[in-house]
Length: 276
Image 1: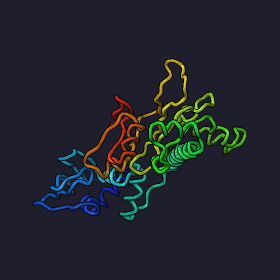
Image 2: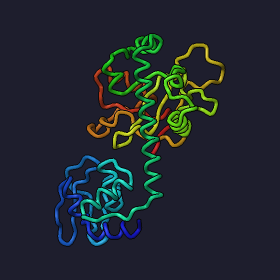
Image 3: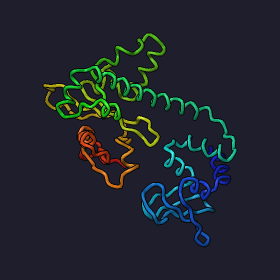
Image 4: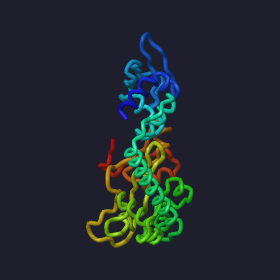
């Protein structure tokens, strides 16, 4: 893979790559570009042609052609490698182990998305979930569909293939690895409204649960997330399109703003949940 990376780095010009998506100007021996990662009118991104690097003096982004493609197109590193190799006409060296890892990662992403879709359909048919949202003024079907709001009501396991079947063991294993299903077989977010967080490529990378079950045992947390790093963004379009953002503590608070006509809103992972 290192050899492939070096070949690609030599074949792809950082100037050509950046100029395909934003304005690049030559200033003496250097090149400056309007940074595509934050809103600006005066070019502040300097391009190092010899080393294939860039640095933005405005938002302080600094890296190489691979990171540029990852950030600009919302790709993983292997996907960026494939994209740049295709641009350069380079055939990548096959790595069966890496391909297997990528396949497993795609399967986990697909499993998370499938759980999000299942929970959304469950909410649409649930008087309990819709009544709770209506009390908060969030009953609009278009709003719930746009943000894939759902309900985990302990029925997911009934709709999965049985453990005795190979496909049942596979999907249940993926959901257990993600934390959607616990070792006990119960759903982690059971009794909760659910909402997904997405990465820049539109893939579900985290899920939030807000308990709505009455009479919870003392100490039961009302706000839950899948295990692992807090990744992804709520309302990615707002970050891409708005110069000013309304930042809320939780997703249901953010939905209240959207319902009132304020689309430039996003949510942190709770009061102390500011991720990178």
